[in-house]
Image 1 (tube, rainbow, N blue to C red):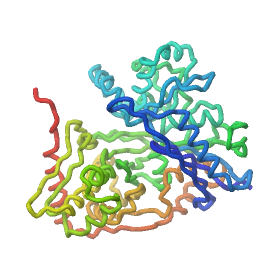
Image 2 (cartoon, rainbow, N blue to C red; image 1 turned 90 degrees about the vertical axis):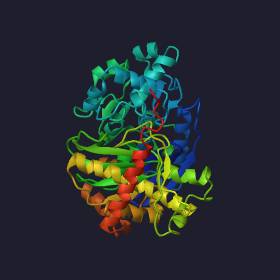
Image 3 (cartoon, helix red, strand yellow; image 1 turned 90 degrees about the horizontal axis):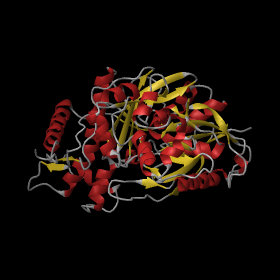
Image 4 (cartoon, rainbow, N blue to C red; image 1 turned 180 degrees about the vertical axis):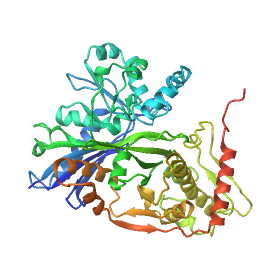
Length: 499
């Protein structure tokens, strides 16, 4: 009997495939990196065919040792917002994938703001106007690739984020799940459909948009003849979710007020807010978390622009240590931060500040300041920024956070996780299975084909690896947070042009 689920986890720097068994344990996995393309400053692209080839190779390797017929279903999770446009007849992309990090449409976003569209877009999509999201990336391709707009209007071109592209390559079906659709700046998160007026305002033909679907449902089956995936022919592709929403699901945050934080290059904090979207007063964004069995769950999301990248900066530019994991060792060599604060606003500050003119600062230095103090300040800055997001979420929702579930590379850092628990004054829980993004996609797929029967069954599989209980005294916590916010105040508007 087919009892395994294959999760395709297509990320920004690599394509991975992970096979999970009924117990939610990893049975096999494979990973293939792929190159980044930087045509000019601030632009980031990927080759869509390379995305497909590396994901196909990873899947083939992951299932190689499994008996034929043992895969019950396939779930897809992906780097969100990255935009691909391809020819409907030939399957050939008309341009490279424009990656979520790419800032080429910043001026177009400013123009949309000047047109007074912010309230219309926020109230409909839950998003701010920003080059981060897919809508303006589609517009750029149509405006800048010769003939693309005319071909799109004739119905010859298709748009998709990365999960749409992979599902189309696997099954021939042109669909997008609600969680990814809600990151395009074109999707009405209340009615769960494309907004025709926003499509007109951004000059995007609706005929090129994929059909929005639930996150756990059979979209199609794997077509025969795909090299390396011949044994998967006929297997249902039955789940999709953007990477951060998939991680929230994989962390079993199924009740309003439950939240997870992923510690990577940046940090992504998502809170389950229940059956209705919450309009943020602090510049957080609202998205569909998932829709399963006709029931839609929403999330509030905040992003820390520089999390793990702050430690990489100490390693690569300041050369404080050779390996990122050494930061934990040096941070613990001093009893406190010595009054030193690092605000890593290297690319501005996101929620709740939203100041693109903020710049990184290091304050509180004395003759006694050592490398260890600066390293500790860098570690602490990640936790302070996460505190800002959690506090904003609690204020927006009125839901007090009981605990924070964590994943991502830096969740292995014991000093950082303990400090996060201390500064939040809340327990921090790290799961045994840290591949929560792929696990979330697998759970969604398994629900669609009966490998798992309910959310309760999935929640029961969540296993604790490490619990960090807050130990800091309240006066110390208040003092440290006051110092952090004072330092943030010094960083704001630093690069703003003089008028």
